[in-house]
Length: 227
Image (cartoon, rainbow, N blue to C red; front, side):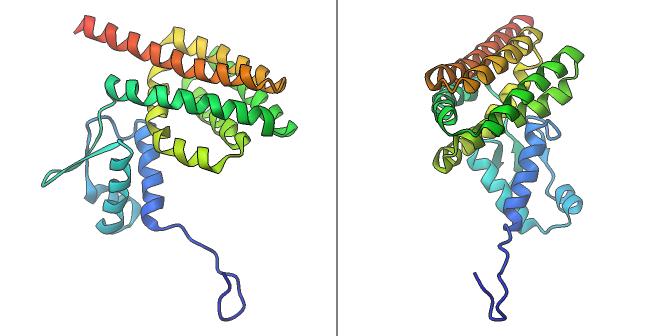
């Protein structure tokens, strides 16, 4: 779009969208814990905003299942329940399989190299026992795979589930056996992509999601036994 003075206007994202991104990251990374009450005043002070865009952002996160809004009580971070994950993970597994098949055909050689290096970097972080670094690299690994699929429609569909899936992945990586297995699966995914083997890559990405859910089920069962 061009302004009357002949300059091209730069589109700016609405403040509520920016706030939703910041809050989403805080929830996924655990800065805002499950079931924690959300203080609108504290967040308004922190980000220097009014309550109106903040409340719009909270409505966005409520639609994504990350926040629970209660009349006259405000907002709280949604609990990360096994039932929610049982609902979300099979859907994402199917989408990840499609994403893998598309990436095998559409990824550039440079992207394939970047994904291989990210897989190796996650393995290095695992060997060093650096879970914080691993989690960052893990997000980068999956984000790069998403970009390599080159399908905006698929990206838009998966975005609604992405934050819930990331919360699940982070929880699962706390289990030592699952963490080790996830690292090995990254290598399998990168290898299938390097061969541009669409069926193998799709299957590997689906299996990656299914194994994460299986680990979360086992962790939930163990927690129930100890309570």
